[in-house]
Length: 330
Image 1 (cartoon, rainbow, N blue to C red):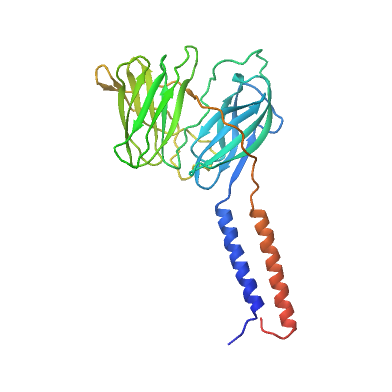
Image 2 (cartoon, helix red, strand yellow):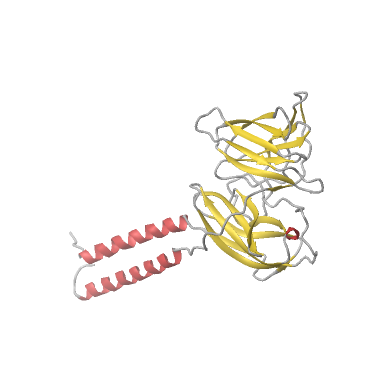
């Protein structure tokens, strides 16, 4: 039987371990990149922020603009994007000036990292920012970590929304959504990630109403829902198609990607109890608290691991050659 020197065995084990670590790192790679707007680009009007955001244990990512001493929320998305649209930003609601695009990646355990993207120059020459955006900034892509529900208030009253489930392991919360300004082309909204397999129940109550309008949703993994309060005790609710992705976007390769979106399946009139086809919804804008900057981007360790593997392989080859010269079996 051939006897292998301990040095060859030790080096072989080290190589196998490093290859295993490399494979794991490649599988768990985190990529955050803004490709448009480009560094220093002058922008105006509505812009698409494009790029890639994908990472392990994905829950959501958030887009912020940092400028004029403030961190301004731009969008929240519950699906990874690879070579696609990260957000749609109406730059006219911000004062002219220089802004840094920041991406926050939030994992399923609620831990997050922040990445510095490109620096842009907003130049609309309006004199003063316009009060309302003309687009919805957050795409409704198919979620990867559960079922996504967008609660929308298109009424002239502040509303209180609650959701809960008879199942003890399911989530529950109470939400407050501000009223839609009369001249605003968009409606305030809040996105909620729900647990698949849960039946959610709740009510939507406009300010001054003695009773709310009820709804029920069966949360299924990867589904998108909307609950829209239109005022006058009318509530539109049901499953909707996810937003269409860019043809270059492979982040949703495991998701159902369809053309068109935003069709709500039913509306309940609280006064009559009748159900009828849903009316089309206007676009909407989320009201979300601004968050502090907490960190910078992190470099991936993959390149260092590859270099280490190369060094080990070189040492292995050198050891084999040296042992052969000594007349020992390799």
